[in-house]
Amino acid sequence: MMRALAIVERELRKFIRTPVLLTMTLVMPILNLLVLGSAFGGQVRHLNVAVVDEDGGPAARRVMDAIYTLQANGDVVRPVMFANEVEAARGVRDGSVQGAMILPSDFSRRVYAGDEPRVGLLLDNTDGVVSGAIRGLLTGAVQEARRPAPTPRVGRAVTLDAVELYPFMPYMRYMLPGVVTLAMFMTVMIGGGMSYLDDKQRGVHEGYLVTPITKFELLLGQNLAGVVKSVAAGVLVALMGALIAGVLQAFTPLRLLALVMLIICVSFAFMTMMSCIMARMDNPMVPRAMFGVLNTLLYFPSGAIYPVQSLPGWLRWISVINPFTYGVHGLRAVLLKGATLPVVLPDIGFLILFSMLMFTGAVTLFRRTL
Amino acid sequence: MSAVNAGSGSRNPGDSGEPAILIEHAVKQYGSFTAVNDVSFSVGTGETLGLLGSNGAGKSTLIRMITTLVPLTSGRIRLHGVDVSVNPDRARLSIGVIPQAMTSDVDLSIEENLSIYAKLYGVPRAERRKTIPRLLELVNLADRRNSLVGSLSGGMRRRVEIARGLVHYPQILILDEPTTGLDPVSRTDVWEMLTTIKRERQLTILVTTHYMDEADRLCDRIAIMEKGRLVALDTPFALKQAVPGSRASTTLDDVFVHFSGRELVS
Ligand SMILES: Nc1ncnc2c1ncn2[C@@H]1O[C@H](COP(=O)(O)OP(=O)(O)OP(=O)(O)O)[C@@H](O)[C@H]1O
Ligand SMILES: [Mg+2]
Image: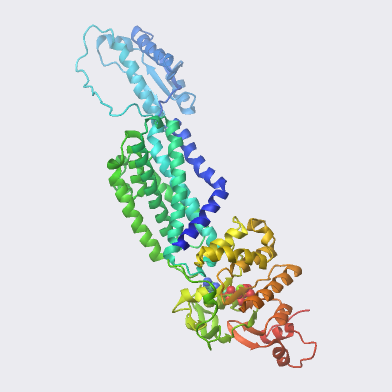
């Protein structure tokens, strides 16, 4: 054990001497949270929409009023008047407007005649989010044309009264668990994977291997050190992220305990996985190249940024054996839903099992010779 | 996991009569390439043996086999009677290794480097407290004990490596090109230090070098390897005698040229 601890001591002494490493592993996830969290999932606003009013009648006026209301409330839509459909179409193509609405010359007449009034909508469907938002907003606005109609609407739409279990959840909060997991993953990747192979190439390992340390002790030391670094990063990012996303104040000691337990288990899972992957590797460029691959393969299908339920079958299989998934799931429960230890036990169970498997793999694969 | 007794007890080899290093028909193959080809020799306890040979001759490979880093393809190596393939951990305890590449941690201080290695060798705390200051004294780095290794000159770093190889009181010290890349003064420093250490601890030393003058002055015997084979092994004096047309002015350079079958353009 003294030998394993000597390895831990060495790694941690190096770690605290290179604060740039720690900073990097913290900055990237926090930036992720701030930029992506604010950029995505928020309402799309400031949409320029071309309007061609060939009708000029009272129904068209009412539609226009509705659009001005949208503009007044949060500047969601900005109507830009165009003379004709051709020009509006050109505007959509060259991107000066994001969509165009054409109120045809017989619009008001048809509204009053109850004769299926139609409104033309030109959308730039290369951007699904924006065109979806415009379609939704304008559909609402167009309904206004019929509002003062004397007869009540026939065939009323069925409305769905959704009950939200948790208070309003901005995208930043949705991302928080994934970002915490990402911080741990990056720490393990840099502090566990890359630095290990750099050491190996510089011959530091050759130095270790002439001492009587066993491969079990060597791997144990490396894994423990990696876990300590990863837990430090995980806890820091979790607390900072929770503060930024505004969920920290709701924390009880029991929830903090669950949080730390989860972070430890995720760290073990990542670190043992990394040591299993690195066991037979020599080239320090490999983990650098692999970072992108693993990130894509593990982070994206984990439910960290998009729900697992939306994944196609083969991706779902990755997500089932992916420690990221369990980390994100558990952390989401603790950080956002107020769960304590019992709720996340299944996640913790999987992570422990996964870690044991990976560590066994690492010990089996690792060679104590050059 | 058990702390290994690395104190004075392990200094006396139990199996007397066995040479410190015994190499019998050692072979190392990398695929179809034979890096070390049927090498046999022995090094007596307390002897200093210089291993010479051109680049790629197989010196480092042989040293890696002796230090358990590379398994033998065939043959046998015993250190004080301990077979390195059968009982590698015991073999490791009896040797201090200074590899060709400088492998101390540049981000750690001299003392931290030594302390971590002492722990890896299972040297108990009380022993560590005594040994490390003594070693720092020995390699003339006591006043720099807290300097980061990365801030040291090449010669100082070599001395750190040498001290590191001695933290567990090994009986055999194995150095791969300890003076390569050092200026003449640092080279002399290193050798003087090795001489002192040797006198103090009755070490057996196996050292490789490309500097013939060093080998001539400091080694009891010289082994020359070429293309994986051992081509000569004797005292510097005898080797010079063996060169055809040898004179009083014959140097080890001439010996090297003769045995390596190559030309030295001068
Ligand atoms: N891991 C390996 N795989 C394949 N070939 C190897 C390996 N290690 C060494 N060799 C080859 O074995 C031969 C001997 O190498 P070695 O490092 O032992 O030479 P050396 O005598 O120490 O040379 P130098 O004086 O340059 O240090 C070289 O041709 C080298 O390419
Ligand atoms: Mg060499």
